[in-house]
Image (cartoon, rainbow, N blue to C red):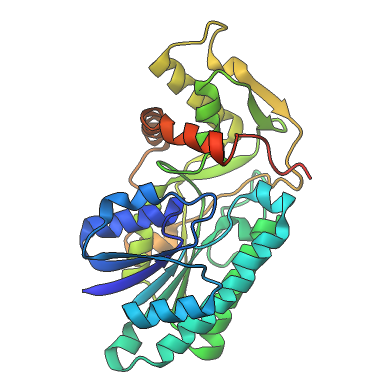
Length: 351
């Protein structure tokens, strides 16, 4: 059975990938995580067992990564570890440069040394899968075709710029040193266990409590929504079937303006909990100053992933969103604990 070392496996997408692979019983899993503010060990608590190991380490700690690779002898490394929230990157860009660029480079140095020490089929079959974002491509106009694997990079936020840099580093390690890599780019993910600084869980938590719902600008910025479990399934296919040196885009085919997503959340909560004494929760929307450099639209053409990997999203956004609302309602204690200790749902990114 293969062994896969996953970095950032206590994060939102990393934990979904671990749960997906554990459900397939297709590999032994090693989860390497620094346990930053957004990490959720509970999201992977259900997969503990003989086929699972946890390593508390920073991917930028070369000694720790060298030791983890030597001990667990993985057949693949899947790199989710990153700082991911655009608003936080506006307030503190250097943390994003450190993790997403410098630490990724240190990880690549250690993975390359490990790979060079492999022989035969182990060396031939090894893969390094780097998980990235559609934000590296910049912004689309309303009538532009979606991003695809040939789209030029044009990042606009500190977050996007650091992810673009990490993508380029991974490709450089492939072209210069021969490391067998894959790069994936995805549209906006949603689903269970997402840290409540992101749009959907933030709006669920605030609307449930009857608080004002801050929507940037006029709420017309468009995102393509992809359920995190569909994304996890795609990443497994990329790791299993993808061609080394290639990139693959995963999109949900569900483009919606932010205000429409917020309204859908309000309607779902009104249906589940009843309207507020003041009326429907849509009345809680409050338009606020826009995010600096806010990209207008993202969307991904996933035709290559469909053709080469046999992947396509299985969840309709509307039903997936309602299921996500239900999950948060059932797990609001988790959100409340975060709110009281780590993040009070305040606005970020106004610097």
